[in-house]
Length: 150
Image 1: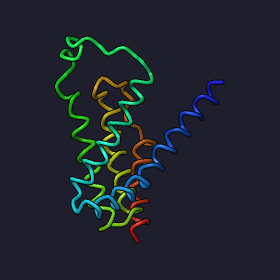
Image 2: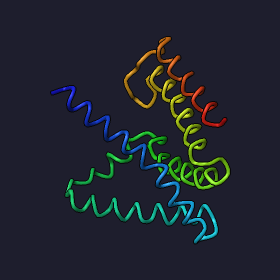
Image 3: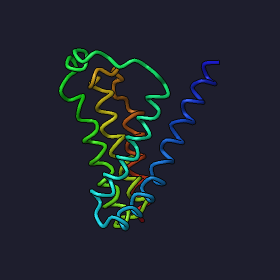
Image 4: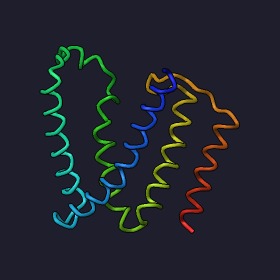
């Protein structure tokens, strides 16, 4: 049963990853409509925020008390900024580098920082020390970027 649930989580992760290049293509098209990557990102985030609002209202989960929100670390509020910078970056990069190279580089960057986050247990996440296998996996991703670029 544990393997089945892991497989379902892994499929969800693959589908989430597959959605990113599709989103990039849609957002590049929005850039053409709005004439600017920041405006296109703003529209994308507005539509996404409205969708999340609908999900929140549908779920009917209670909101935390305001004092609970104030207890969180300041860096916890930067995720939206990072998401916005990511979307603008993809809108700018995909037409210049192509979808495959852009996302190969993004995955390589994600893997590099993910290894550091795991190594040091950053953001309160569990530690998972570096090993030769994990370093080798990261190196293979970099090799994949080089091969995709050629």
